[in-house]
Length: 340
Image 1 (cartoon, helix red, strand yellow):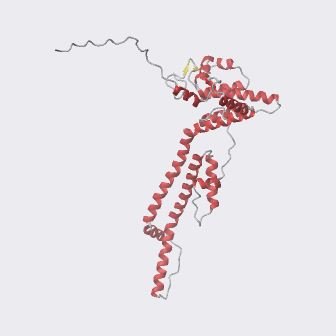
Image 2: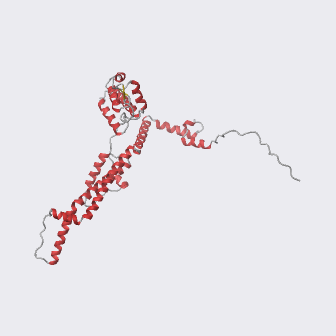
Image 3: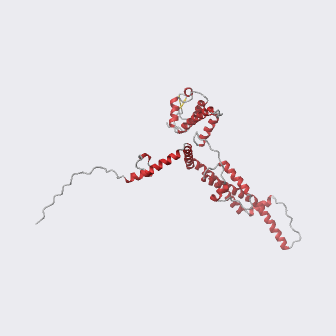
């Protein structure tokens, strides 16, 4: 039975003799929470329906999520000990449990500590992705408020997410504009009809002029009938804008679940390694090692040489022969005597 899946997705029995066998996230979090509260791990595993000790050990060894949850519990325990030594009030175990569960539901590492989000400066992003689609008769403040709402909800962290966030905001802005045009179409057609009647009466020099009256439902129906082709085109545009907005939001979700998550993990790892190297003054020692390697490259072992130099050595090395050549000479073939 595979342990790399939750208990709801595994084939076969999840319990055996009243004990949990298949990996279960909530049970693993519950065990770690009890350990943080001061209970002994062997005592916890001895009580059903908790898994026995070897099964829980197998979870931690084989399942990446269970290992990350257990590591986060150990990290939280060390943080509490450090807080006690420094007379600082540590966080409660319930806070750590909620954070671990939220990270696992998002698909992040269990020990992930979310950074405080800093919203981007859209004035610097506009030259790269295009300006706001705001007409001169529209308010730029309304579009900025809409874009800030999308930014607060989606929290874009890279260029791809910024592009998709702006695309979703632009589609929503244009969607509102098209909806406004659809609602104003019957009234606009009614006003055009009144203007035509007034112009006809002016040309005929009629003594009595038609007094403008509020539009009725019949007048709006006539206006919609007159502008129905344009109304249908606006309706098609509105449907396409809805699809464009939904597609942008869906692309953000796919990016975060796929390549974007990998890129973010790599960048976070690089930032953490750089911070660690700077804090321990390891950057200067690494620089000295690189200078020494450039001056005396042959004095260094092959494990410390750069990867490109190792590859060049492997390319210049002659390939081994498949088998040694035979030292026996071939006998010359007998030749027939010449004919007389």
